[in-house]
Amino acid sequence: MKFRHVLLNLCIAVFAVSCSTDDNNDTPIINEIEGLLKIQEISNATHTIEIFNTAGDFKTGYNNVSIRIKDNATSNYIKNATLSWMPMMQMPTMQHSCPKSEIAKTIGKETVYEGFIIYQMTNTDGSGWSLTVNYAIDGTDYTATDDIVVLQSEKQNTTSFMGSDNNRYIIAMIEPNNPKIAINNLKVGLFKMESMMTFPVVENYTITLDPRMPGMGNHSSPNNTDLSYNDEDYMYYGDLSLTMTGYWVLNLKLINDQDAILKGEDVTETNEKSSLYLELEF
Image (cartoon, rainbow, N blue to C red):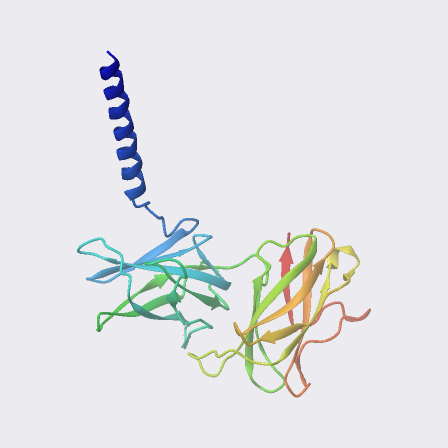
């Protein structure tokens, strides 16, 4: 009986070690699109391009976009591809693109690539835009294109305007994503329209900031700072002080590197809003 008891304990110990070893050898399945919602798919005969963001749709303004490429024959996702894209707005007599970034592999992921697109306008029904994705895999070039829907954002989070230097610019708010009663990090992109297809980043300008609440006597807030250029990510940063919830107008002035005002005015008793502004409400 004693021998049988020892043998039983030994078997239990071996089984436990075996289970532990198997558990340690199991490779966890990582969901690389966790927290993302699919906007749509764009396909060709060889691949399906899956397009995601956190909202599940495109809207006017800044859109951070994630992409996966699925092999239609194997359903495997491509780990090594080089991508570019071209959003295009078709108008009655012309077509144009919009500011966009390069596409790079998402840090810490094997099959997901990301970049941003800033849609400066759309039709009332969301139509008018298409998206072409060009990509290369193992030295072979591919392309896929389709119409997309771009919805109109409720507030003015981007604006296109002509500066006093006769150049057209686009400003888009990127952060805060979730405004709060505090000093918020304000992040803005500034681009110049060189042609209908090219919108390079504008460097080393200044964007002054004067936030106001029109529904509350047009009062401002303390401890705001103007936006300055950051040459690490090519964006503009400032401090946005929000003292209460509600509708805010972010009155702006764009000043070039020669200290000339290109667009915008001071808010005064007789001028309640700058001609250059963004909006948010929380």
